Amino acid sequence: MEVLIAATPEEAAQFAAEAVLEGLQTRTEGHNVLGVATGSTPLGLYGELAKAVKNGEADFSNTIAFALDEYVGLESTHKQSYRQTLIQELCKVIGLPEANLNTPNGFGDSEEQIRKQAAAYDAAIVAAGVDVQILGIGTNGHIGFNEPGSSLRSRSRIKRLSNKTREDNARFFDGIDQVPTHSVTQGLGTILEARRVVLIATGSNKAEAIATALEGPLSSACPGSAVQLHPDAVIVLDEAAAAGLK
Ligand code: F6R
Image (cartoon, rainbow, N blue to C red; front, side, top):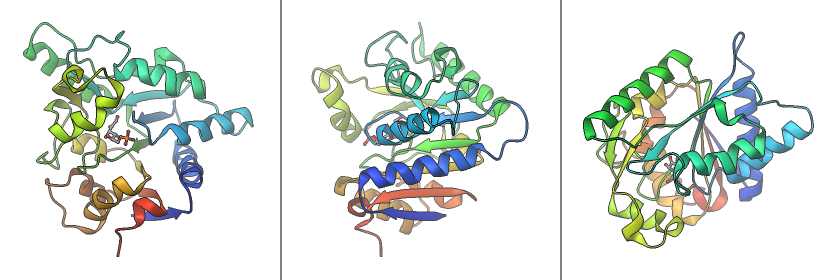
């Protein structure tokens, strides 16, 4: 694990963008495959990637992207779906064609159908091979929507959202009642197969989760601790998120 501590969230975004671009350069043939996260934290990083595109240092027009997660019960056209969020906050910002963005399908007639869609999504990720997976971390230590208690070898599947996560994400909805109760998320085992993972965390509200994930025991109680197992994990923090580290 490489832990980089930046002075500010802006500098953290720059460090993370460098780690992402470096990780993408290692592919020798075919299209780059980028694993992407939703949420507030990676927005600065996406802004830095956009700057690299503008400067001619990066080009995402042939990159294939796989999202970490999606809400169950929202159609892919729903404004709060992670697909629509990523189209606005990622595709349009870095010039990644919408057709190249893969997101889990959490919409279906039955649980069985969504389960099958999750398994097919996992298989597509395995077939593509992710070069770099971008990660955020929840205040409860989740990565993707692998909530505490997730198996460290889990695959993409339906996962119930914790009350903490639903409270944290209520800001994007008209109240907590509107926040879906379940998601489809890449599993921890799926995430760990990416050749590089770049986890970015900023702000004092992430300090406890970061300390537990990086310095606590490897445990399903803190899914973020799974990054300890990855051979090429780059963790980028600002000083506030790093405050709990020894
Ligand atoms: C989103 C995701 C989540 C977020 C986490 C932090 O696709 O996978 O694990 O990364 O909830 O969210 P923010 O960045 O909004 O604090």
